[in-house]
Length: 148
Length: 148
DNA sequence: CTGCAACTTGAAGTGAACTTCAACTCAAGG
DNA sequence: CCTTGAGTTGAAGTTCACTTCAAGTTGCAG
Image (cartoon, rainbow over all chains, first blue to last red; front, top):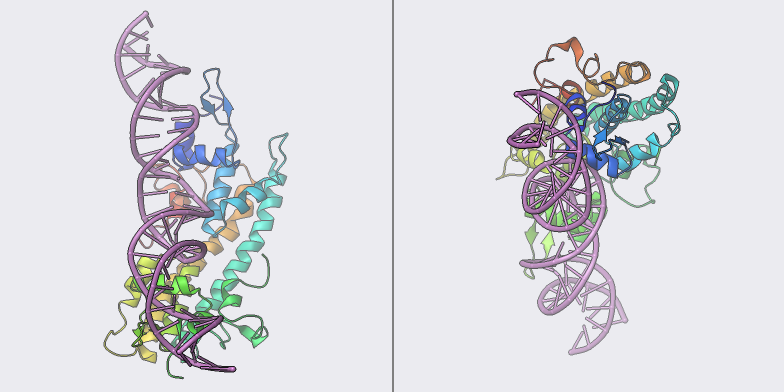
């Protein structure tokens, strides 16, 4: 068995066939076709799907995931090094997200528990109070300055 | 100024007026009305909105958030202790999420970088390989056994 | 070669979380 | 008083990430 049918691929990846077709329409994964027009998946595509699901866990949109996957070579099967490079970049995203959530965890009780959580002058929401004039609200915490 | 108009409340909370009305329809926040039927918000409601936005960051649905907020007293303004209790429970959720993401971070490079990420026999996806017969796929990592 | 499960498509439906719109009312400064 | 910006409503629209459906086709076991 060289390639997988969509059913087998779905079973192995844990993603529904309908979602796989959707991912393909969206340009996130690829398949070849049999003479009868049925999809066949190479096993290496499993890695793409794994990456997609992991990235989704981190809260990344399919749009962004597609952009990331677009950095993989299109004309050859991505090597271990290709994936390592991609993964490395995402490790940074994870680090950031983890740091954010740790700050959340460390400050949640203190900040919500106290009277300060008025969302316009709180170290959690607006650390350093630097952007006070830059429009109100919980912008820093919810959309951290680093990154898009 | 005792209470806030929806505009001011939106400005201070960083949430659009339309979203605030939506939250109210959904029973997540409350307002009083003027004689002319306009909404007026107490400042303490800012804490609710803050909680909502933070919980959303953790990936919690408004449904679940509503359930959590329902534990606050309805007949009186929540005290510091009320919020502290609630926050404490959510600190645990955050801890779990952080732990998941750390596992993700620690294993991402190794797992995706190597050839193992076939999503059916990988310590990241299926640690211990215990649920091999329990349906295939990236179930453990994506829906960790602890919790719902 | 037949039967049937598994596949194909485009279109429409879903649910979450909002936003936008139209038509109207309120609040407050000049 | 009057104007004007801010607020009100219900209904409909939007985006994301899929799922479901109907109608038809393919692949393979028997």
